[in-house]
Each structure stands twice: as structure tokens, then as C-alpha cells.
Length: 487
Picture 1: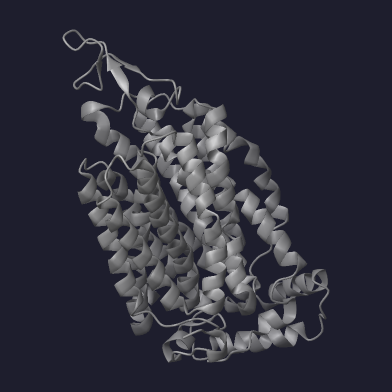
Picture 2: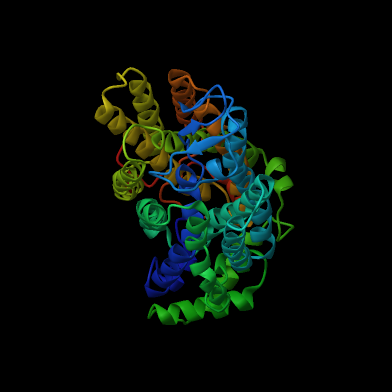
């Protein structure tokens, strides 16, 4: 496998231009990151006093037709607006989960759109969709309308998570990939830490949805700013456009722009050699022996990872203490994960670091089961460790899978894996709501360990140049640059 990245040779590993694009994407995807974290504020478990005859002034009594909700913490939520209590509790879980259903659909849709029509078009469509449907969710008058809006915003969230990440990865050279994996998560960290403050100020869920969407209407201007991925342009034969974009990036990064056309021709020749098609579909993943195995492994790993992360994230919102402080602390504690990801990708094998983080998550959740309920600080600390492990694993698996699959099928393959992740995220609220703490945590822990086992069967990808064609992946042998790896 070649270790020379010709595109990196033209535009550099990561220069001024890539920094500018990273900033734009990080700012533009904040509404997406808010939606991934805000469920504890818009769909919380709310205390109430029942005013029914025969149950007057009883707390959290069921059944109850006339509840008076506690507004001391959250003034208005979807739970209280649509009375999602007692026999309607499962509707709250359903409303939570439909975001994941939307992300599932968006992963399939945008994965195909991105590989077929380009990274730029897919990114723009996804960013615009999130802003539009999050704002629309604030105006609904019925629960079914909210669920539909949540599904539609989920499609945009899925597209943003997938396509924006691939856009940045394909503009980055392999030597800077470990850093970009961590830097790309800054927007999630900003959203996670700032959301409790916004939720504290805007304690009515409709206002919270509006302030985390409408101000981002400026993403319309991205149509004139974001570039198309030169790697994608080359794989589909649009060499002239690739040359134009690479020349512009090279000049912006103050690099020589000579011989760019010759380099593009060379990359194109390597890409299409022994390949009959420029566009690939989901079916091509299953036709290719290696990709079929890798795609199925990645799919189940993503399922386990998403189920554990979103489950633990929602569980923290139910722990004793101030909800705003708990969520903000979890965000602050997660922040060092960005540094941990960079260290892991720089100095350790992808497989080793990913397996370790999954195991850390599983062990911490098992420990949580045996900590007495009155040890609030210890329980919160162990929960934070589990959340940090699952989040770090999620970030690492994004990079890992993006390196496993070639450019021509990369978004589709990751979209396929993301479908399973959304299924894991979909069932997470129902597992949280089982009502038996040790059972919920045992499920989360078991799936974390299962993900660690499955990662063992993926190829090592540290230090490789991003592959472009399916044929290159089929002919590739496991290659590790020993100087870059601590064994």
C-alpha cells in the first residue's frame, strides 16, 4: 500500500485554508450538537402533584388526569406540555428515540447523496435541514407533530454528523488526521458545556429550541464558501474542477501550485485502475468480500457504541443533584477527551486505543452497580468515567471507519454503519426507562465489552493514506508504520 499522499503534497497536511473550513463547519454544526444533548432538558422526568379526586396532593401518583407540574427547575418541557406521565411515559421514550430514527434515515440518505452528488451539496442540505426543522419543532401544537419534526431534524443531524466529518477528513493529510479527529469535536464540547446555561436562561422548551436554531440561518452563506472535496472530484472523473480547487487551496496555504494537473491525473489513474465505475452504491459494499466483513463489524460496533453513549448520557440527567450543574460538569469532564483522542491516535494503534476505551466504559458501568445510592459523588464520578469512555470510543470509531473504507464508498459505508448506531440510540431510552438500575447498566456494560471484542477483527489503519477505490481495499494488506506506533 502506498504511503505517499499526493493530495497532501499539493495542499499541505493542514494549513490556513483547512483551518478556515474547520471553523466554519464547527460553528455551523452547533445546532446539531445541541440536539444530541438537549433531551435531558426538553424531555426530562418531571415531578408533579396530582389534583384528581381520591389522589389529591399525592406526588407522582398514577393514574392522574390533573397533574400540577413542578416548575422550580424547568418551567415547561415536552413532558409537561403533552402530559407524558403514567401510561404515556413510553411516548416520552418514543419522542426521544425518533431523533435516532431520523438520524438513521439521514445516514442512509446523506451517505448516498454525498457519494453520488458530492460532499458539499450533502453538507449544505444537512446543515439547512437541522436549522429549519429544529425551529419548526418549537411551533408544534400536538405531540405527533413534535415527533415528526424530531424525525425530520434527525435526518439533518445524521447528515451533518456524517458528511461534515468526511469533508474535513478528506481535506486533511494523513499526518494531521489524529489532530483533526479531536479538533472536530470542539463544537460538540462547546454545545455540551453551553447548553445547560442556555437551558437555565430559557427554561421553556420552545424558546430553547428557537435559540439553538434560528440564529444559525447564516449557514445559507456557506453555499458560496465551502469547497467540494478534491478527493471526491477525482474519484468521479471531474479532474478540471479538482485542479481548480486544489490550486486555490495551495495558493491560500502559500504552497507551490505547479504540476497540480499532473498530480491529479496520477491520482485519478491510480483510482480507476482495475475499476469499471466511478460511482458506488450500498450494494457494492456487500459485493466486495473484505468490505462486506468490515462493514458488518463496523455496523455492530457503532450500534453498541451509540447505545451505550446515549444511554449513559440520559442516565446522568436522572442522577441526584442539580440537573444544570450535572450536565455542565459532565461536559467539562468530557472536554479532556479531545486531548485523549489526539494522544491515542498519535501514539497508539487504532485498534488498541478503541478496544481500551470500550473496556473502560464497560468496567466503570459495572462498578456503578455496586456503589450504594447514598454515595452521590462517587456514583456521579463513575458515571462520568463511563460517559468519557463511551464518548472517546465514539470519536475514535469515526476516524477508524473513515480510514477502513475507500473514498468512492466511504460515506455510504459509514452511513450503513450509522444506521445500526441509530438503532442502538433508539432503544437506549427504553433501556434507561426499564426501572431496574442494575439491569439497565448491565445491558450498557455488556454492549461496550461486545464492541471491544468486535474491534479486534478490524484491520489496523494507523499511518495509511486514505484509499480511493474498492480495488485498493481488496488488494491491501495490513500495513503499520512501526515508527509511528507504540506496541
